[in-house]
Length: 562
Image (cartoon, rainbow, N blue to C red; front, side, top):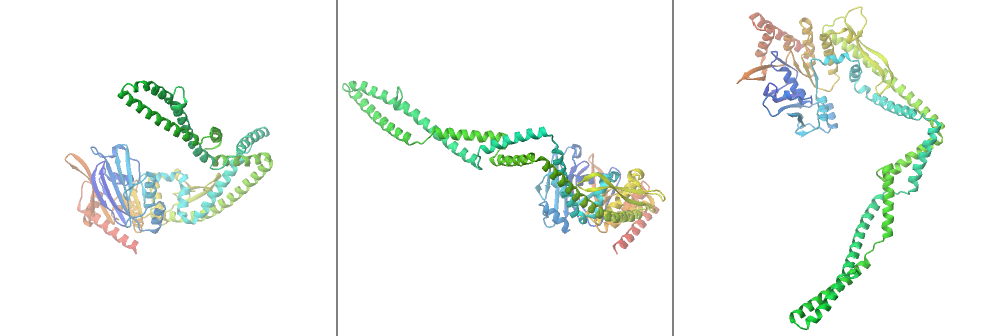
């Protein structure tokens, strides 16, 4: 149940909060007061498309938040399947709207728009002013019929879907199998080449990882070995090298050392350096001799890696993928080598899957027709309640061109609004007002079958008046007896049925227009009915008429609750 609505900085709304209750919640107000903005705000919280002009002029952002109490076990289970869990029995959806982007949250956690919409579909059903036009499209009629049947069709529909997938796969394979002898031989030769290339490589799972590790280690060993050789060349093996140059320096300084103490000290110091360099060269030679590196092993490892990487560029990014590709092509080779037998088996398998699909589609159609008959009767009864006294409603069954994932039923809603006239498609006989009432009848029937607890109707009264309006109000009260209904209306007959009445009004404050939503008490509700009935001039007769209308509505609702 929708418990609360909080809107800030949207269109004419500065900031409002509203609490809704069980039963029939009615919203009324002058044209242009902002009733559509209220419903638009709810739609935005549920994931509807946002445009720049929705944000109030001068505001940096718009914000809308709605909270639902979730009590039905079916709803709780479906939410859990989406990894959404009510907190203290409450789900809160919010959306912050900024220029060019928006942020959606469920119970304070940021979520993608797709999840927001999926959760919304579990919690609430909104019928807008023009939604009844969807009845004109035959493609929607099958969905309504199946939704009415609900769980009773679930298992057989899943079977049909699986059978259709199997049949479609076989058909696709059969269509792709149509090749001539020359093409077959060319494909066979090419596949044999690929398989031989892979098999001759002698690949082993995990070999590439092992070789990569080994190659990196060898690369480091080679770098070390190259560094040692180069160092050795500079210090003792090269021409010239540090050791030879140092020996020449010692010989040159030896004569001077006998003439001067300072030169003698430098001579001794140079001798110590020569001794240290000799020690270094011995250590270097020992390290170089013990440093294992095989040019041959490095070359073999590098070539093997190059071979594996070449195969990867052709057949897969991992050895597992290459082997899988090879096995797949080997199976194809077996097929091509005995192609006539393969085609025969494929045709037989296609026939078997088609036979199975035909049987499951027929079973689905039989069960669907049973529920369609019940739906016909329920909608017909609902239409009579809405002042369609001598109307015949029919769910027409035809066959689709070929198989589909939904079976072979092509369903169309047909209606006869006048006695003696055969039922015809809705688009050919129903006006906008009539379509609106037909949709209301369907919604009323579906409400009893659906887990959704909250229904919103936006001006369901378009195009109706008089006795028909009274019938619509009674139907709304009937739905409200078992569901939470939020309805925007211009008709006093419907507004009189309110369990909870709200007035939407626009006021001008400091030169700015703002929309407010005001809960009405019993007397205030009567005054609002008086305004709707009397327009600009309100007389005592109009007021008494409003009071009488409210009294009769309360009596009717009491009878409905019994």
